[in-house]
Length: 281
Image (cartoon, rainbow, N blue to C red; front, side, top):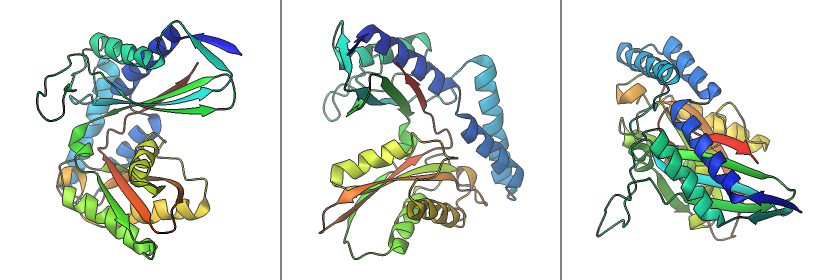
């Protein structure tokens, strides 16, 4: 049994949110640069050129990539041979969020009550936390600052199990087409397939924490990722909704077994600034 003081969790969460909000993962920034070089639309190419310049400025100035520094989403894989000491696990995570958003001068966007009061909490807490117990004595933490210009464009549908693969491709394309320029395309799309109404949405969110250069380990789902990406880039939405060739940079799918009577599908839309960072304790 390995003892881990929760102060280490606070420190790691702080470090990861500072990293994620300022430095885009290398494969995503490279995708934006490649998209800039192959986009044929003048307006789309100009938008991608600005996006690439923005990434460079954020790196050089250590400033947020986007003014919407998101709601804090945290995925934790906690080894069963870890014994946490020194405090509360979830409060340690929230303290890390609190410190990162204060130190980084990141915009705090969380309100205390979703419907009535809607008063800003002032420190971007509470985070949305997803925790799994896994073998081992390590803790893996993945953070996602999730902006809501893209989050608001996300959708879920409880399909009949008799649907075809094409129906899922069409659903994702319909979601992105109806979103237009609102989520700051070119988008990165997380798709959750299976599970239950709630869990397929978690799968879609988790999919966005994967690097977009990765592929699903299941060859059929990997092929579906590529098929959806190709279809999205034929919609003509284009960068910032100006029209063009590059509507999406990547599509990641996560799946889970489901009930014989259903087929839940969630589409979590992310802007071109698909921010995430991971670390281990």
